[in-house]
Amino acid sequence: MSVSQRVSSDDQLARLLQIGIVLEQVVEARAHHHTESLEEELDEEVETLLAEAAAESADHRGRLEALVDALGVDSVPFEEIESLVDARYGQTRPEDFDGVLYDQLCNEETAYKFYDDLIGAIVESDAAFSLDRSVLLETLRAIREEEAEGVSEVTAVMERR
Image 1 (cartoon, one colour):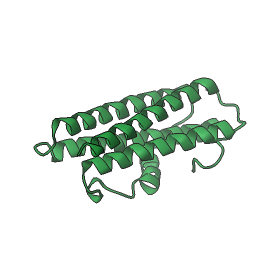
Image 2: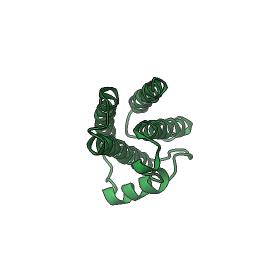
Image 3: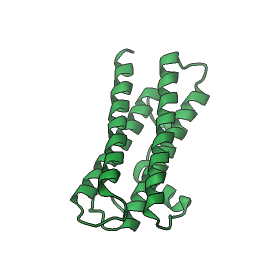
Image 4: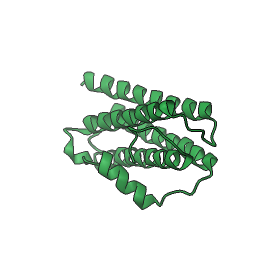
């Protein structure tokens, strides 16, 4: 399932939203991983950035879950969605980056790109969803904007170093 095609049904939309949920779980887990593994090495600014990123991902997950619930479709097992996310977005591990900030920047950019592609696929679709299209797009655009702000925040911290 790809975000590069039009979204043509509630089921397809639900799967894509579930991919977003798992992607947010990955972002949150990686932020927690860095906080725990580098606890003594992290300065307050980076620690705050990671905590805010984890909280934002949890919030995004909740909003995406509400959209999936509103669709009223059967959900795909977590393991199946997780393998899709891992295949598409999990090519790197936290240790693959030269530092916590580079990993966080990659996470924020990946999430932004996912939401941007998903919004584009929905806008190009002429499918009628059981979920109000304006509510769906408003929610996804708000999440995308928060991801863009996250990219800016990480970049600003990186520039100060």
